[in-house]
Length: 211
Image (cartoon, rainbow, N blue to C red; front, side, top):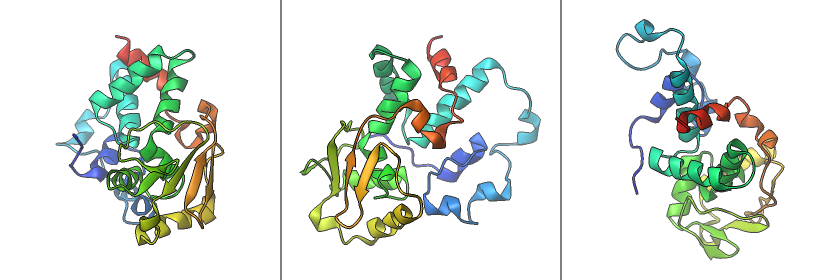
């Protein structure tokens, strides 16, 4: 399985936005974005200026793709599937991305970042309806139960991540019992429900792929 292995914080610097790729580190003083560092590359100031339409569309696509930890080929497959679904393509795309198992594990506070959630899934620590699933892109359906495997419930990395539940809870389309480490995907979210990504302009992504 192909994956990005370069410096993660560089992505945030490129987008000039916190993409929350490293969990708790992104909320700490160690985050490079707190230091207002310039975008990476040689003499980035010389490249500052008004972007053309293509540049704006590309940045929106890259931003969303990086937030969910996907490479281009897989992201394009999700977009093509969203296009074939009835309804609004942009909303369909968000629904599919939110249904990914690694994302659901992250949203349930079983992991502090999507990359950590992906690792938990790959290593067999996550069950869907009582069955171990090791495919991060597995699409969770409404009313599916997502739980941590019984032999993995003492893992400190999961217990530490669950502390965030007491601070901020979970998204309205999810429910979780932190004591039993079980959660449920209640329903597919609406675009307006995904408030932490309200600044993403999905229409630009549609325009980019429609060229």
